[in-house]
Image 1 (cartoon, one colour):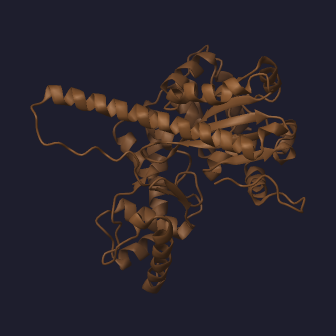
Image 2: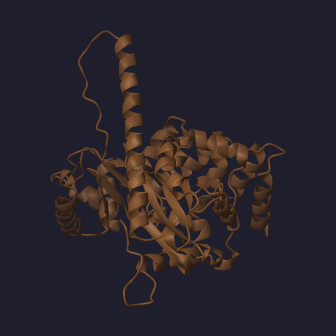
Image 3: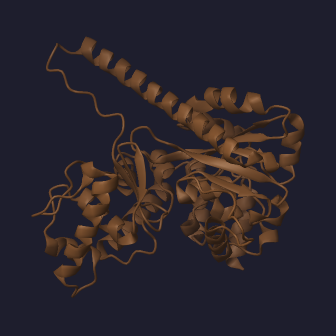
Length: 415
């Protein structure tokens, strides 16, 4: 989903930039008051990077982007799924320049924290983004330009993080975009190889541990998935393609995915429409949805009587619940990117939104360690959660340098 950098013949901001600024103004103070905060100190960052699913792609990024970018004044960054920078490479002068705007490892460059920038905005939109000069929300970044491309999980299609090039005007443009996209494609291929090798090794161990039996077909490398966390509309991944759905179509697909046995027209209407809505509405919407999917995702066109999907569809919110059930708090948090369709008023979406948010919060406040809890506190919904911030203070070691930021936030809440 690459949007061209300029609108020909006009000085008006691109719609992508205008929309991002509007989001930034709703969640942030004045642009010149924005400072990217540190999330991890050096010791914590080492542990986070080692455990992150993007760790295997670093040799690919170094070979294809970092080495060619040395002595060019460009910085190459890899960020996690929340927009926090895990690795930043480049020549010494570029890195010193980056320090002046806190574009360094361990800082948060999500859109909700620093406003419009390629890394954060690419994660919000779920696609490739370029931001040039004064298009940045923060005036301190107006001398910089950047290109960012999300990295997707080879199984679920969910976003694992981003790869970004930041520098002067040469950091944007068609050639730069193609270069970063090619690097991400190679990185995703590397992740697929890693997964296949691990599965092959596990299969080999099982064969030596058990008597021979029926051969089970391997799971498909790609799984159709629907992203609804932290998004106003859903992003559907099917057969290696991505499609942004309308809010209503997202609600319908989510309900069908979560009820694989099928739903009657009456049940589906009650899940996505307020009381008293005619069945005519859901039937008309299903006609439009089928027409859309027939063109872009024909393997997922819903069947009728009852309405149901012809194959499984993985919903990221359901993944979070599954990880929480197994006590895998960090994995749940890695997937969770915000509330389920925060603007949706569909009755069952509201139920799902509240359930996922409440269970994640309860699990992290009860059992999580400092790193996971501090990562949770960076979510917009946790900004005013006094109890959660006090929990972080309790689990942090007495001499941790991160306590100061937690104490300052609690004082701001008290004020």
